[in-house]
Amino acid sequence: MTNSVIEQYKLGAVQVKVSASGRPNKYTVHCSNGEFASEFTVSEYEFKHYRRLMNQRITEAFNQANDPHSESESDHA
Image (cartoon, rainbow, N blue to C red; front, side, top):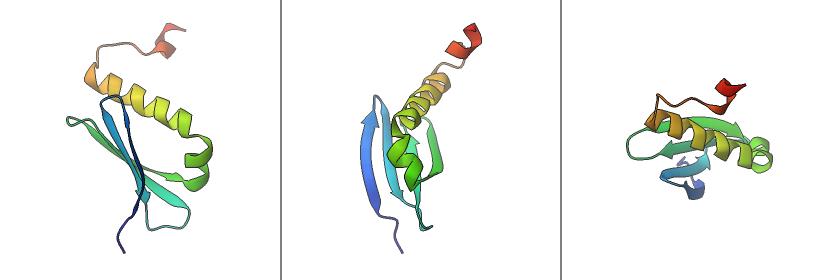
């Protein structure tokens, strides 16, 4: 069974591809900016209801990977 692409979009320089994982109610999210890549699994519920938070975390992770010397906002608390 091939993993069908559910959705594909860009977050700045990061290409995000969401595909069926082969497991019921689970999606695989693959993110890449050409230099770094990340892949993780989310439930259908998480993808539908927490997509904005997921996108914020993807963006933050790739920003930190591109500039490992920068401090995150949580370090300023």
